[in-house]
Image (cartoon, rainbow, N blue to C red):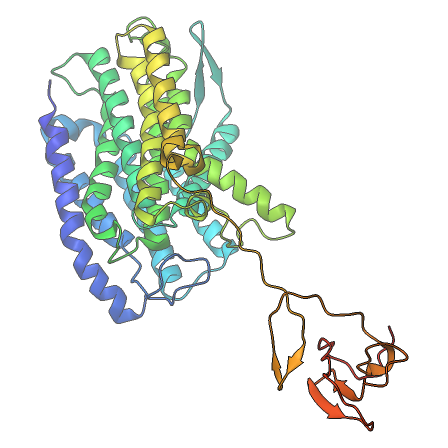
Length: 457
């Protein structure tokens, strides 16, 4: 198999991204792209943003290097990958840098995302049809294809942006998604043109390698504890490229002919795989939109109700939350990819997937781990001591005796006819004031009701 071109592109992209991240961090500090921690943030100290700029440089370097490789030279020019991605990605990076440094409102960012998607469409990257079972195709008009392409790009950009809430979370999930895309589309290129050729359909596999390389190069700087955040510069850039991969694949591949040569379900998996890859970002985004609109807020209003916030609330640490969400992303994507390329029976694949789901559920919800509850003492709630508010030599004793009913007028009486009640307690201050009488006896201090003595019963 001719895999070394992909490996070389991956290494170049990852190396350039890794080496460019420290200079970008210093640049972010110099220009002030280091905002203070907000209430919804999980970190306490300011951390530089704008890491997406290093990722863009790494992807551009890998892409330009790929154009010099003989197998890729004939496919990158006509696919819109070079011009389309460099121009659209550059626009997204400019908007992201401005937002990370000075801030851009939601409408401004949305307009920039639509413009970047329009650049892709202008360079020939758009949906034209969808594969359907029984060798049929659902065709789209030009206007329908343009609108749907822009909608998918904008939704994916915001989905990645929404999950970028913990150190390394968005970077790792997008990396897992890119690797899954590469395995699937590379296997289809082998089916299409054999192991020793790189057909035009190799564009999605190449884009997947570029995306994975950028994430691999940036993750060492971004994993917990992070030294730099990707910011909106990175999250929007990753979302743009993540949306480009399935759109270009559906446009390039002839899935009706693949239905007779690919392993399983070649007509449906091009739609199932993006859904599996994006299930966590899209689920989190939909939950956020519904939650905020129900509360009467803007869908772009920030809050602490994301999936990663919920996992932190139920007791997971920062690192374990990220790793568990990595595992869920890997499970969803590997299930679909395995359905396509694995030769095992469907019953075996379903059984393995079910076992993996059960294991992840146990790790995700701590209160379901029965083995951790064995031998632990049952927590008991202490009963607070009662006060009798009896005064002896000016001090309050905790004898556990309930105080007698409050008499009217604030007079500390033993009874209405008891001549020994000769002291009055001021409720607001707790001061005992002697009254006239021959026998003072032991006064009884009443509870502090916070009002004057004349409070009616």
